[in-house]
Amino acid sequence: MIENVVGTFELPMGVAANFTINGMDYIIPMVVEEPSIIAAASFMARIVRGCGGFMADVTEPLMRAQVQVVGLSDPYGARLKILSERTRIIEAANACDKVLVELGGGCRDIEVHVFPDTPGGAMAVMHLIVDVRDAMGANTVNTMAERVAPLIEELTGGTVRLRILSNLADLRLARCRVVVTPAALATKDITGEDMIDRMVGAYQFAAIDPYRAATHNKGIMNGIDPLIVATGNDWRAIEAGAHVWAVRKGHYTSLTTWEKDANGCLVGTLELPMAVGIVGGATKTHPLAKLALRILNIHSAAELARICVALGLAQNMAAMRALATEGIQRGHMALHARNIAIVAGAAGMEIEAVAKQLAAAHDVRVERARDLLAELRGK
Image 1: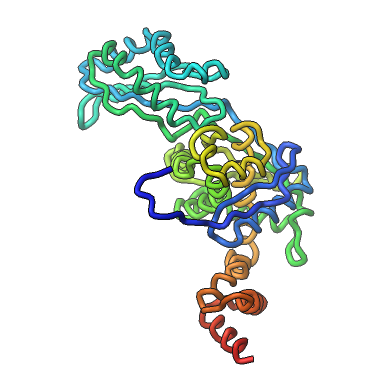
Image 2: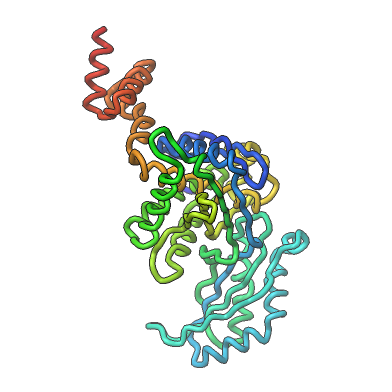
């Protein structure tokens, strides 16, 4: 799969349960090293399941390929020359992948963006807008960009430099919404109404403060990235697109929104670019990626994208609920206790015995684990 291989690096693969999305039930494979993520997502999914589940939808699978043209004295004139040959450019791009066109995809349109005053002089950047169907699409759109480059030079008299996709897949969005009643969020200590107010307040903090928003959005990606990794997709591309999307209004803010509706219910939404595929790349070469797609039992990239945003919304909901009540560490550290036991030197059956005592006492520290291990071995 890659170059200069010296071995493989394994991560745990688990499954999140209880997810109902658009009326369908899913078991969701997740590859992640951090404890509590899968448990938290599954717990929130169980709560949401009782309120009708997650509602998700996606736009068309449109990706952008950029063709940069430099050395232009008339960039706006070059723009119109390119646009005047739109049909010819699209035909040249689609000649690269006749199978994609037969499947209903292919280059749909072009755009041209002009940057008249850059440190390197004027430039025009043409975008190929390509329907990639069930692929992530990077190789497809990169090939198309390279194929049309000579034609763009011929039309403009300029020099084509970069020819590559954009990971800001702003035409390929996935959206998810959830509505949760106060009764579903109530605990023995906190009413559902109070819980909703606390969670909305936590969101408002993330909406205005980039320091909070960075951690808030990292929590969303805690849910999405493990599924992206499990299915052999490009998690770096998803991260890049998500964080640019979070700053599209001029300041870095929350990817989710949380509010209270007229009935007093908690309403959460998430929208972000989601360039995922179920064909091509590692999705078909890595045996566990193929297994993950079998576990999901899905039939399109659109379905995978819907599951991704539901998982991200669930993870964000779990983090806000924890932060609004007991704090993030109590549950996280209890599940982290096994790792602490191992660091302290526990092995075999000792790990579970020490971890249970650490979690029960809510004192999850290496020093305490060493003391417990010494006591256990003394007995």
